[in-house]
Length: 324
Image (cartoon, rainbow, N blue to C red; front, top):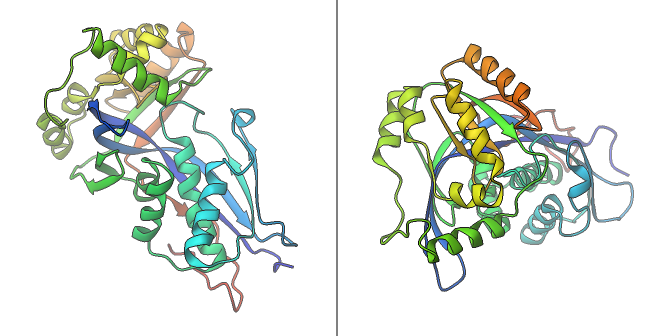
């Protein structure tokens, strides 16, 4: 039986793609990607505790969209725990509980945040003692966005998005998120981009994708207006093709003073950058009144990656890592 209080709680952030450039379809079926991620103050929370028997790894999911998230071995948090156990030799025993706030299928990497949080939570619970870089390497095997959910901040992602390097920047950014009631399938959005490019309805990049220099310069300046003007997403046209109502949301944000707006990742969440908290409230009210979004959130970024938010109970076999 596990000691009373042997429970770890970890929060991991959602992300917004400030830039997402998509190369041509590769022979392996993937696209070469270059992206600038920013972690924002919308968090998934995963708790892990030792079960009282040898039941293995189980998960329950609560919060908006929980019914759409599998609770079998295909769940990303479960997969993360099992992968960590396999690579470290730890006994795969954990009861996981996921509390969702990031929209399911919303293009903000909520599932990846679950995986990142589960990796850190089980590492702390089992005392496997991996460094964050080692956890990120495991995370890359689970999904392209998992390493960033561990790292947080603002970062450049290359390859499939999993190879990260920090992006120099300054300042805090205020975002308003227009959420949709139904998610979009990421593979479906990429397939639609390929269809649009083949039909000549979207530009086909001739070279490997690259992030606009204007965005890097804008982030270093800390000027939200410059950052807003440099936002770009090659998947936006495909997402709007599949979900035409997104165009109305984008137009409304522009009409109400957003410094910039774009579909986040594969969508359908639309993210608007605004000058400050007052402007965020004003735009949130306008979006809510218009009915273009099922829910509206105000968040800030950048924020750190996955972090434990409750101390780990200490025992001879489970040293405390609560400072990680």
